[in-house]
Length: 356
Image (cartoon, rainbow, N blue to C red; front, side, top):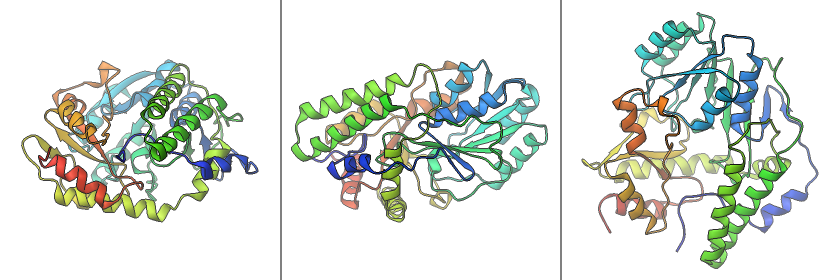
């Protein structure tokens, strides 16, 4: 049976791109290509080592956003994110006044670009001398670059069949370290895992699938120790150049809309985004809240549908109130990316609506 979810596969025609002539400059205009998004954040944090080293971060975030600041000795505070994944504008303003951060990180979530009221509050924070960074990882196709932000970062790995890839954008790249070396070990292990994933889809050999999963976990574990900056691999850049981005955008929107219109909300399952009009750029996943998340994940996995939890809690400091605790305890991501058709979405809908 076809798997829905998990890491992207690579095939022979993809691996052939490894042998193309490298055209791998880390700097492209106003953008620096990094191997990982956390490295881009590390580069920004490193530039401001002489500041007060206080950063304000969304309470709902990935551990890899926190890690660069912790490694460099910054003090991290967390502002409230509401259940609809919008910024609590009162809370962020109060904490900006209380802690006087030198840097503030913002996430737009799952295709929901920032609202004017959110940007207005961020402009007030900026007037206090704070550096603002928008991580657009969950809105990678957004064309908006609000002028309130000094930096933009993002990760490609959950969007495309690339073993690595992240970026940092700024009007002025002065003072930022430019990575010169690729992370060969990580890229090779991820490439192997993804290629084996492709072989599994061809053969349905569960042993190959198990090895692919193990290699992927080993690769991710290897980059979780000490952050060092690397440039995005030439292989990943070559893959990105072959991507049909218009198709990726359209497929994600189509799949998202299908789930939105056909999954029936209940006391056990609720949409994170209640208003489709708020999804203004291609979404990463279709996020839902599930009362018994583990049971629903198992139900999906039994049909070879793998819905990840974004994100597991590793730093208890993010759990600043019951609302944030609810998000971490109940949120689940339904896969909608360009690998999948409406027929795949129908399978998800049937299970979400109670079919065994």
